[in-house]
Length: 189
View 1: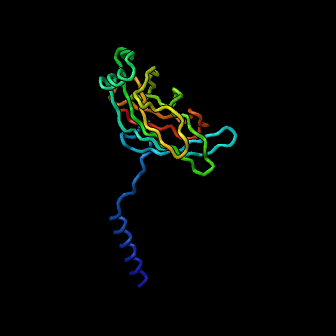
View 2: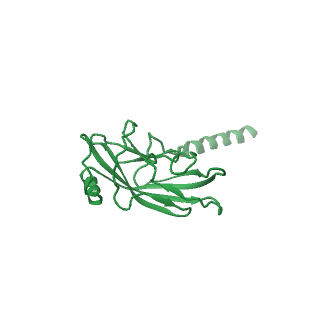
View 3: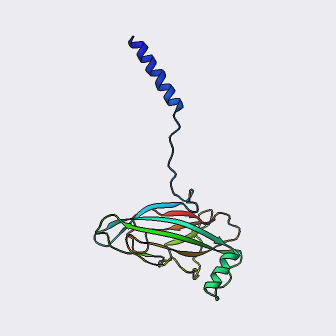
């Protein structure tokens, strides 16, 4: 009788295991797996010099524009915008940045977009593109964000015309953060 029950339980366990879907593996945001357009990527940063506080952030790339359309938008913002270097074109990204403190006492603002290393473009082989001196279309993603607020705006880059899959990076080690938090990767295509 005990062998019969044990055999029945073993068969039942095998059937349940065979019918169960495979476990879902979480996809990490990385240089080899950058976030797609309209994908909200959540992370955290620490702010403060003596006592650090952890703040939650969420970044979503809402729109990307490249080539002639990017150039037209840049020239509408600043008619003195020069053409990109030979073999390059401009790429724009409209981003939503959300910033939230974890506690009521978390009240430090975050300086967004003032540091040139905060938003960086990488080639598809992950080499860094030189920083282009451009005036992003309005609203530019620049300013102080207070906890509980969000900001939406444009950032601008120069990328190689033949690069089919450039990547944009947000580096939390700038803009007043203490360097804690992940570097986040987004598709610029």
